[in-house]
Image (cartoon, rainbow, N blue to C red; front, side):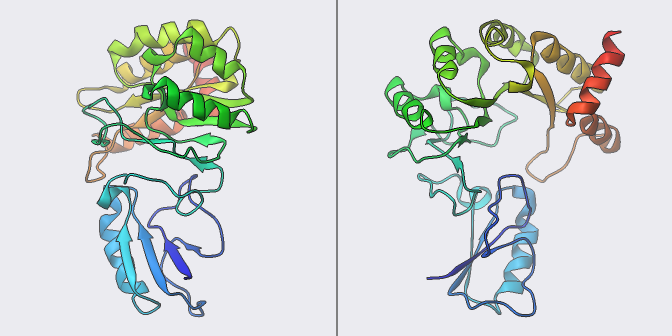
Length: 270
């Protein structure tokens, strides 16, 4: 069966083979048995419905994805995500108010090959599961953890396991002010062995009563701890940004480009 995979939004994780599309069909299309529209974000639902109408002339259309069906209980490598990206677990044991993940943690078996670990909270998994994951990763190169590592779960034994791998990027998360102590402890363990360009940190900005001044302070703190900070601007389920939107989005752009970040840090700390 030949399936056209359609995505309302293109991201760095989107697959890029010949059966992948990011909008309406062209004038001359290959023959397809089905069209699958995969919706990752709730704010893309309206566009997904519009795309369904456009693609109904090509083949029967199905709409699914995390925004509609949740994360699901499994993972098929390379189908709806770029080659190399893998999930070894689904869900998360935490219930953070800014996060849309609302399913309990479930470890996937078997552990599928990949050098980019996209799990929501990989370090919350059992030791037995982590053994399988690290064994798989021992065969990989340019390993990245863009799903975000929970700072309070970084321990000496975990750092030793990271050291045994060909790590390209470790991404931690700094989601609220109280997390600063866990981040500081994680930094102490990690920066002995990994340079700043390998230690990245998502810093949540714009949630609830946040201000640009407070957000900037957290970003600078992450830098001072030894991380390269990246601002992650909060959006609600409708896709709305915090107000004033223009100021927040301008602020975020500065803190998502490494060269601009280095310039800004130099300006703030000198």
